[in-house]
Image 1: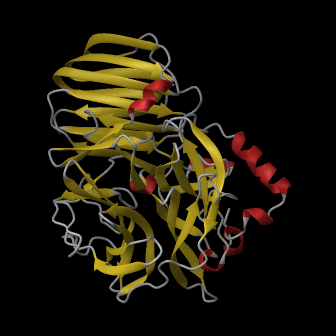
Image 2 (image 1 turned 180 degrees about the horizontal axis):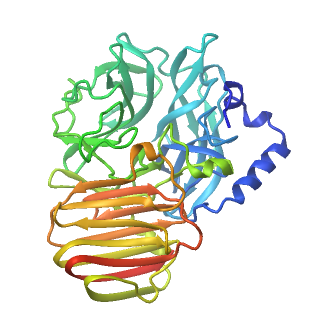
Image 3 (image 1 turned 90 degrees about the vertical axis):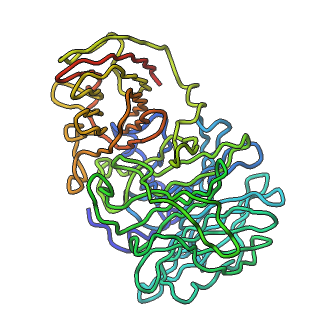
Length: 489
């Protein structure tokens, strides 16, 4: 179905209850609805926004177009949780449609100040010629979770030298000042980020551009996020317009990070290493981080990408969010692990230990469509070892280690209903180790695989049939020791 501009910018409030009821029923009939991931009740979900802790709850908003699986008039939808696992539906957080967000409440972040949660986001507007005019806006949530919009923009103009692609403010506090990093595009159509400072979250001063070594690095940087962890500065960004190079940058758009010394705020210089992708899979974009009350840095990403049709589109919805991940730094790299709270979802454990030699094997209790699997592989005297999951006789998703190439490979060429084929059906990365731990979180239509305690991660949507329940382990041209544990979730 082709969506007209008028259809994409309809307001939810203007639709009839019958239309909403029909769309809700269409979504509920979908065989690929998730069970432990945040997903939209209807329509399209994209970037996580306003991820924060306030008044005893984790708060998480997401970009939402409620009326179909396309990018249209964006709302902020509000979820909250005591434990990062069980989320309560708190309803719409920010409705667009005022003067400064007439064409969407775009992405932003949140910070607590004066016992209120301050939500700072980009208001999207279009003029009669459909020219974009962005504003950085403020909404404030009190302890009763009532949200009130600030009447005027807190940043009303795009600075000289930058285009109207100017969005996604991420706010933090350093000393007595608040800082915001905003994704931007220079007038020469190269991507960058700029910094603002404030003493009160309402009056902002333009400090200038964040100085990095990433010159000519894509045409737009979306969803920037700066934080400090283990004594180092980390800048997360989602650059658009990178060209594929070997195993890297295979998706339509990328998300990654640079890590280095803590940011020298007075002169905005960031000394850092090379850009690394955050996730090696097919479907990961626009992540956002927050600091938990216990000091952990937690990240959640959008499990999807723009400008790609997904199999759930025909059921009136698209996309979900990743499981929350705890971040740490090791050997100059960012490490991601699923938050420990997810252990609370585990049901009865099944396990095995075996040696595989030139064979494919199944084991009692190892099957299912929603599970956590921990598989340790050692004593590798083998050319290939792999796990086939959500498998049947004709379908499978495969995570494999190829010892000759020293690569971990995710293959979804036979996963089920195909999509995004123009971007390939496998993803891989180099990883040389003496043993491997594959930690899988499999939901109805997704997989997140943490390799060797989060050194690498593969996140992907998959769309198998309901009868794709088998889990198979294999060794090719040699032998390997395998031990595994599995929990239904």
